[in-house]
Length: 135
Image (cartoon, rainbow, N blue to C red):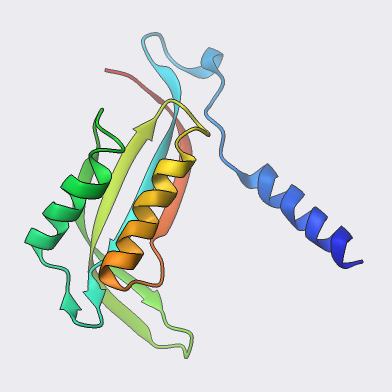
């Protein structure tokens, strides 16, 4: 029974994995792609991640994995802690558009893991959605 439940869960999760739109649905000059949004909370056990620390993380971990381009925004984030309290923190939103889905997966995971290790974070929030993109 446990194997069946696990198999069903994996099948359902696979069905939820975003896929780029079909090429035929993109306007002329644009290609199917996937937009990946990563939310990096800046609160850490030792204080807030500084702009200098963020710039070094971006240079060391993100840019080498996504040299073709990315965007970073300062946003105000909030989430509910397990006991129910709302925590607010300054957050960095990293937006990357990839054309090699699902080939981007190892690089995204490496960036998320590096941030968690470097700044003692539990996780990085991730959102992906299909887009049509091009320069």
